Length: 411
Image: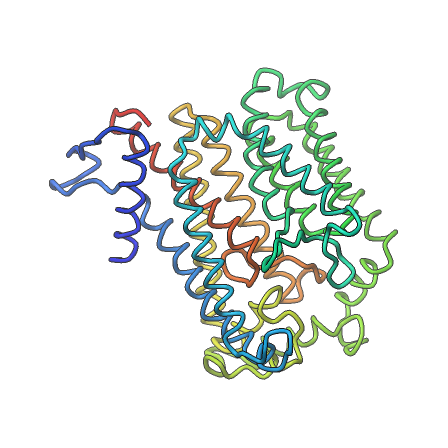
């Protein structure tokens, strides 16, 4: 708990400087027994730190064989570890910066950030500008690193949906004035994402945006109709796309074509089976030795299952559960304090992390069709890690402002 306490202290000092005033630590119900009150939610911090550190270790373990056997990496076993550590450092730095910005400022920036995200999604589709990997054009090359705009769009969608909901609070019961404008915007974003294609990001961003609208009070009948329409729409998208249809059939019976459509899932299930209760030991995975594709990104959980067993998977699931639960608690507290934008943003971030981690875990365990979504806070990927850390910084800012308001101060 010392590490979490230090992090809490650093965030609190940063916030105090940003606010430009010293904040005394009162005693009372927020500090029983005369102990200074906590500036931040240590459970939230500790669960996030735990996921980041486990992810760092497991990315190294899962990527050693790939890094050693590739000319692209210079045959350096620590290639992915070093890049992941650098991205993590950048993410933490930007997380601190995002924590220093008051939520009122984030609300002012929300529309502009969303427009910037849409522009990036357009730019990445321009031939010769966007970088194509494995048939998908999702990245912008920025020298030694690649930027994936869809990852940033997840943050921007949470911010914009919260700002939109607060601005339209009085007409959220109206389909034409409250719901339809956001639906048109998200459909346009979805068109851009499907053009890459990035179906997984489209699903996550749709859940974030309409989840925030639902939490903000959109008409329940309209929301139910949307849910039905979304399911039908996703089914049509899957059925009209051969490669998505093949993934569905491969998911239903991966062993029928274990060397074709069911290759990734069959090897993921083998990894889970080999891990049993306590795993084969850290570094002992066989599936990561060029059998399981994307072992350090999309299928990191399978390597965790093989090396750390059922116990390791339960620890990861529990940490995600704590993080998502605390995000919703923080959001609910902000709404109780009548900071509706902050509360909806916190819950939107909770939705994002919860839904994306659920999809990734479901894919790894064979509960959902194979989809290219990473495990938040853990999988290798610079844009994803940076976006996750920025989101955590915003979430901690909401928590910090809640605590200042509950003490009678000014956030």
